[in-house]
Image 1 (cartoon, rainbow, N blue to C red):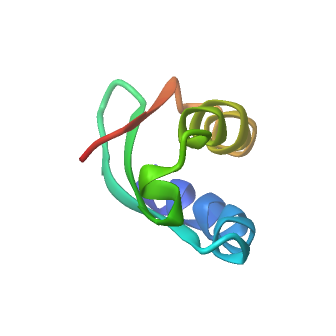
Image 2 (image 1 turned 30 degrees about the horizontal axis):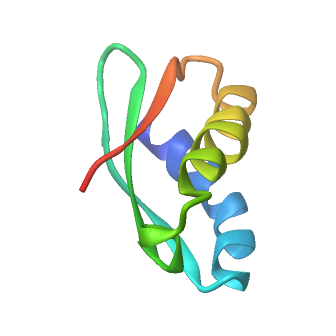
Length: 74
C-alpha cells in the first residue's frame, strides 16, 4: 500500500509545489493511517489543515481505498 500512496502523492505534489510547498510521506500504518510531513510554504500555512484534510486526504482515499485517514507529523 505504501507504493500506491506514494504514487497518489506524486499526483498531488505539483499543486503544492506551485505554491511553494510539498508533502513528504513518513509512514503508512497497518490500520490505513497515512502520516505525512508538510514542508516548505505548507509547513506554517494557516490553511495547511484544510489542504491536508480536504485535499490530500480526500484524494488519497479516492485513489487508495485502504487509506482510512491522513495525519500530519512534525
